[in-house]
Amino acid sequence: MARKKILVVEDDRNISNLIAYNLKSEHYDIDCLYDGGQVVEFVRKCKPDLIILDLMLPEVDGLEICQTLKNDPATKTIPIIMLTAKGEEMDMVVGFQMGADDYISKPFSPKVLVARIKAIFRRMSDLQQISISADHVRTFGDLKIDLLKHKISYKDHEIKLTSIEFDIVEFLSRTPGRVWSREQILDNVWKEGKFIIDRAVDVHVRGLRKKMDEADVYIETVRGVGYRFKDNE
Image (cartoon, rainbow, N blue to C red; front, top):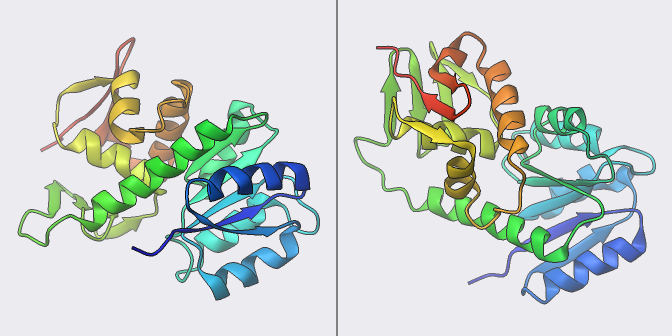
C-alpha cells in the first residue's frame, strides 16, 4: 500500500521539524513549506493526502489558503487540519466555515495530532468501502444524503460541507429520532480523535446549521442532552 503524503505548512521551523519527525515515525511521507505563497501551486501539482496548515503565515494566511483550496474542485476533497495559536471558539468557527476539517491549538501534543490524522484517514477509508447499492442514498423529504458521493442536497441544491460536518449528519441520520450526547458523537464521529473537546461538537453543529439554511430543522438540539436527526416526513 502506498504511503500517505502529508504537507506541513508552518513558518516556525522548530514546530515544522517536530511535526515532520513524529509523522515520519508513523510512516507518512512528509513535505514542508514555510510560507503561504507557495502552498496553492504546490498542492495543485503534488496532491498531498492531507494538509497541516498554520493560520499565521508570511505572504498568504492559512484561512485564505484553506478557502482557495476548498473552492477548487481539484483540491477540495483534500482534508485540512488547521494548526494555530488562536484557540478561541470564534476562530474555530471561522476555520470550519472556510472548509477546515479539523482544528488544533498550539501548544499541542504530537500524539494528539497523529490521532487526529489517523481518524481523518479512517473516515476516508470507511467512505471508500461503502458498496454501491440501492440504499447508498438516504432520503428524508427534500433532503438527500449520498453516502457514496459524500454529498448532501436539499431541494436538489448541494449543501457544501466539510468532511466532519458530513459525518455528523450521516451519523445522526442513521437513527432518526434518537438523541445522542456530545460524548457519543465524539466517540462515533471522531473515533481515534477523542482528544477533541466537547464544545467542538457545538461549533461544528452551529456551522453545519448555518450552511444547511432552511434544512437545519433536521438537526435538532435536545437541551441538556445533545442532538438528534429529526425526520420531518
